[in-house]
Length: 259
Length: 354
Image (tube, rainbow over all chains, first blue to last red; front, top):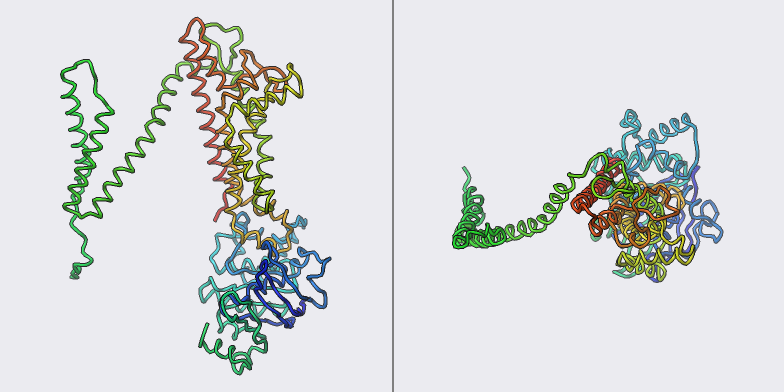
């Protein structure tokens, strides 16, 4: 399953502060969409609105429409918890649950929701999710060790395994490689490319090479100054953004003239 | 061979033997002075306080001056502050060591089988034991824990995970106020509560004592749990939310297990804090010489009250009563020690591994 996401005049607030202003875009299914832009431009804020994680912060709210295959996930009668079951998320810093083993971490999406499953189903799911995250070979002999015993890159892949184990439609990655070394980064990038066969993948990154290497579509965000809202400046095919952008700001940013 | 430029070169330093030598010399001189001064008065022994103080001043001054002339002012200040801090530490430790030593030395005399198998019923003079008090203390503290841990835990969860605005601020304020309640007031509260509800016949019993202890214990549990919940990284909560786990399940299955080791330690510290309370129990649980296993009726003895009454109401063979008081104090200290050991084991077992 893979879903298409429509953002329509989306305004994102922290209390009274408008953090991201008037975003209109369509995120395609079975593709990788990259969000790039300078720090503080609202990329991370925007990606967190896609699974309603934004509102976890007190006072944070969203205006406008966000449709997932036509369904408005901000409609009044939508349960944010159910949205999050369809939209998995990988965070900037690897955050496996420290009290759980590797296997329990992979199954946490089910176990934490009190869903019972037979041992054989659990074993099968663990193997499938870990293989999906390219981690199976490295950890198959130590599934009962704590998740925090892995290296940073392995922990991040464990978090991806945890996210795909619940079989979501969309995977969000908020700077998933910014805390990792180049080898682990390459592993995650390869994985992201594999994931787009099945999921809609959205990735926030500060690394423009990364965006140009793996993404199909790229959205460039910018702010006019501190305290001003972030805006979507340009959204197009990745080749176009990096070779021949239509906006001067985008050109300046991708060529490294600022930011 | 590399040469170190003058800017980076370390200043010359005092030899390593200087420090121990200075300590021995300073306290030796102080002792000699004290002995000389006391020579006219053969009655007086060595004045430890004067020797300690004189030696400390001598050591600090000589070290500072010597170090300043050889090593420069930075290292001299370092040595002086080290001396001050170490002395402050020693002063803080002296009462602890002295107290433990006194309790052990005096308490061992009666720490026998009788002490743990007999009550004080019909005992006059020697013999007898504190079984009734030990049972009472364990029952009362146990009940107090059963009352205060759920209340404290849930209050802390409310404050950290849900509390916003006025109500949360009010709860925090009243928890702070409760922390400062004098223990006798807690005892009076429990006593009056039971007096009003059950009448004079049911006012003084084990449960009333447990309630008074719970009043004292709850704020400590709230505070400890709150601190532990606050240090659970927010990333773990977010990771759980992002998996579509509702907030209450996130708290029960992610936040609490992560903080469990710290919470367990906090609870044990809270128990250790109330187990030695005397004043509220004198009022609410009363005192008795007989066994009473039932906390719901009749007076119940506890160890602190046992120690107090043994000392305050000495009988014919006064020494027997005083010995029992010391043995009671030692037993209480041992129980607290076991609890602390338990807390360490629990935090070792439950703390996140990795």
